[in-house]
Image (tube, rainbow over all chains, first blue to last red; front, side, top):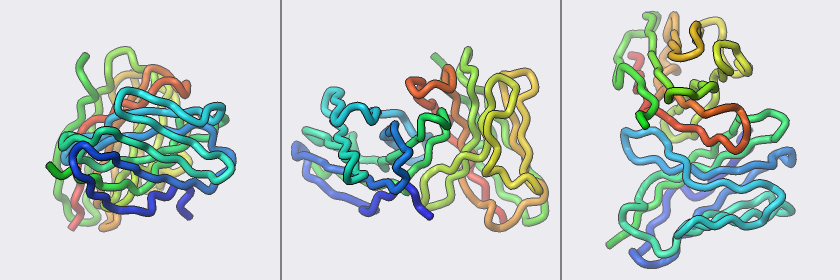
Amino acid sequence: DQQVKQNSPSLSVQEGRISILNCDYTNSMFDYFLWYKKYPAEGPTFLISISSIKDKNEDGRFTVFLNKSAKHLSLHIVPSQPGDSAVYFCAASAGNYGQNFVFGPGTRLSVLP
Amino acid sequence: EAGVAQSPRYKIIEKRQSVAFWCNPISGHATLYWYQQILGQGPKLLIQFQNNGVVDDSQLPKDRFSAERLKGVDSTLKIQPAKLEDSAVYLCASSLDSGLNSPLHFGNGTRLTVT
């Protein structure tokens, strides 16, 4: 039973354009969400987070949007750069359980020069 | 700041053998995690330590997996005996504390292949 879903296994985007990575969750108790980026042969690296009290959080080229009613969040990267090519994981946690994050299966982003 | 160190990077063993992985977290990080990442899936939490105490081991297959963090710093994860389905990348992560505003810092992982 996948509580966190990333239905697009892969995504290709032209350099300079917007990349939109999507994530859906089923557990209504989730109230804190993170995005991680992973390069081959390396561990995931924290990118950006959002709490359920917000619907948007921005950090430079990265913006995460949260739609609680739809149980959906998305990561926007603008403008996309070749160095953004990596696997992106969405993760969610229920506050009561601290850092017990449930990860999605990941989306592989390829930014084409 | 030095990152989370893990060893070995790769390990190949036969089923029913035993294996151990080692993790040294970022200095000062009280919370340490072991994750299992099977190919094509996201990381799955196996065990979480706060200092040298276990916070959550609900998804650890305790009949074959064990982990310890005796001095509240580095940690070892052991599998005995290994099964084919244990083939995965084992990721260690640490965070300053268990609060939600403490992001996890991951090591590069140990890729285990069980034949």
